[in-house]
Structures are given as C-alpha cells and as structure tokens.
Length: 120
Length: 110
Image (cartoon, rainbow over all chains, first blue to last red):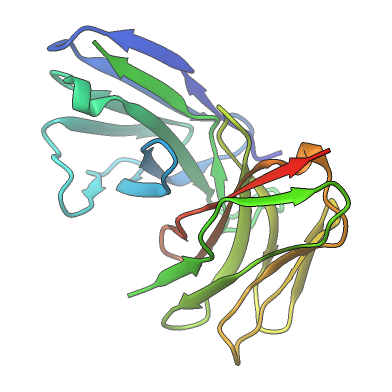
C-alpha cells in the first residue's frame, strides 16, 4: 500500500510554455499533498502544501502565480509551472499524507518518484 | 523552527565497512524521525522511522535510535554493500510537512 505516482517522469519544454505535473495517490486517500523541489546534489525544498478542496499554502519565496497547485480530489494534485524558464529546471517531487485509513499512519508522508523538468 | 543537521558528505567506504551517518535535530514538541534513501535518478524511499524517544527503527540492516537526550538519530549499518550507494536524508515531522537535512551521499566501492 501507500503508492504515489507522478506523471510525467521527465519532461522537456521550451521557455515560455507551461507544464503540468500530476501526482496521484493510488491506493489511499490523501487529505494533504506536498510539493518539493530538489536542485542537483541538494536537499528537498518544500514549495507548498495543499489540502483537498482548498487553496495551497506556499512557502516563503515561492511564487504562487508561477507554480499553480490544484488539489481537486483526495487522490490527485497537480502542479503547473507557468511560463517556464531555464531556471525552473529541476526535480519536482510530490508526497501525500494519508487521511488515517487502511492502517496507514496519519503523519507519514509517502513520496512519488519525481519529475525531472528541463526548460530549454 | 524545526531543523535537521546531517554530516557533510560525500562518504566513501569499502564494501563490508561499518557506516555511521550523523543526524541531529532541533524541534518543538515530539516529532517523528525518519531516514529516507534516494538512488540516482529516483525519488525518495522511506528507509526507517522512529516515532518516540528510545525507539529504534531498522530496515535492510540499517538502524537508527531516537535519542531525545542528545537530539540525535544517527544511521548505522554494520556492513555496507555496493548497492547501498545512494543519498541518505534525515527528516523530522509529525503533523507538519517533513523537514529534511541536506543529505549525505554514500559511495561504496568493491
């Protein structure tokens, strides 16, 4: 149990275009999803926290108009990078926290495999 | 606020050597502590966890004990293998988003 998927795993886009990344909890309901960004050889930086049906909470320094997060259901959250630029190239990782069901811990975060975004 | 400090890498060991990766934390309340592993080009996998003081988490030969008195959660393995080469992240959290250390890159050579 507790599988989180991300799609796509890799994406290359041109500067100025928008890219959408999906994060799905496959076998549990996720009341909360988190989006992290990881630069090469660095740690994970929390970008935002989203709760199903409400607006995402962004960390300081993260542009909410550039990184649009939608958490429309208990199993799906999306991150849209709008008007992407080369500096947005990074590894984006989502994670999901369970709504305390099926034996899953309510405080443990389950991570997706990540999406590598390259903006040319 | 909460924070995690990990030993700087990279760490290079020969196969079958003993591994210790230090992790200390600062936190309010009583967080849970985690070790995650990231293999090249992949996402994070939970390696082990401990939810309260003196708990020992273990998995795949790795161990870590939640030490409240020293605010530490050091990762150990008695005999590393080449396949253990990866980046290891210490993290803490409970009802808040996980806070991660900077990661320690481990390279094991045959």
